[in-house]
Length: 118
Image 1 (tube, rainbow, N blue to C red):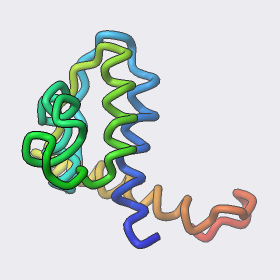
Image 2 (cartoon, helix red, strand yellow; image 1 turned 30 degrees about the vertical axis):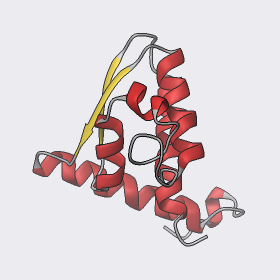
Image 3 (tube, rainbow, N blue to C red; image 1 turned 180 degrees about the vertical axis):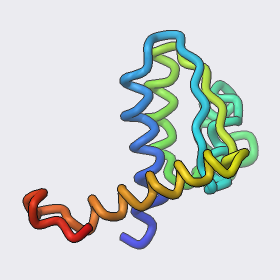
Image 4 (spheres, one colour; image 1 turned 180 degrees about the horizontal axis):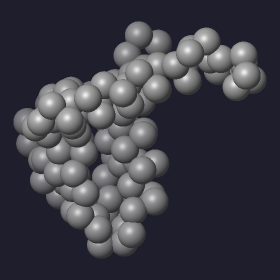
């Protein structure tokens, strides 16, 4: 699966949202425009368009299943979210460190922690 990281960010956001307090406001950082553009779109319009481009008559949105699942959690928990690129050197470093840690974990799936290649 070539695009696992693209699909994974939507799944990770959904899982994170499940642990936010109901009614919370959250901001996600990403350098993937499809992710932050999607989170900044109005969920009700996406749903009204049946998760398709161009007023519900175009092609299905990329990662429709994952987007719909994320929207479902956001809606059920009454969460308000926004997203954007890192806006400071610190947030850029934190994003890079998180991506590195996720990459290390991915490479070491199936190994006991003591055997991880870090």
